[in-house]
Length: 208
Image (cartoon, rainbow, N blue to C red; front, side, top):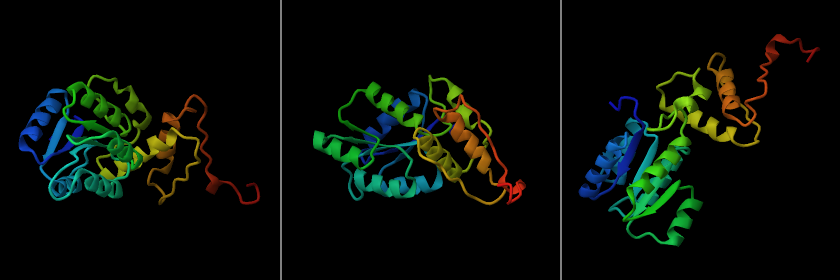
């Protein structure tokens, strides 16, 4: 149980580093699920829904970039922060171009890591970040869910709401399409304007 705390999946094949980082993140108000390999991390991801993944780059078997690619295929909106003792500027540029959220070279300052974690959590829908206001949760307050799939939908909704793209929401009747539409409007730059819901099924074809 994480008692409502943001859950971080931490991956490193060095048990000492894994233990130290777990203690630091726990002390900062986060719940941590530790994995000692990329394959163990994927198994953990299948069983739970972390809000951010922090992984070492150089690991035996599946390395950090391979793990990132697997996560991106499974959960495209899940932020991944990569740590490495072998980091270079080209590595960081390449990783961020491929969609990695953050890249920190060891040794790193604890505050730098916590800042990246907080920034990553801001992209995750409905996450309460320690020390920050929970007013950011208001945009999705009408949607109550414990579903990992629904959390992914809300993460995508929050991301697309920051753009000017048109959004098409589809699904069976009664699945909450209008609730998601209202949530997108609520977190968008246009939220001061009206939200107009039109029930097209109730309008005669000739009038439409």
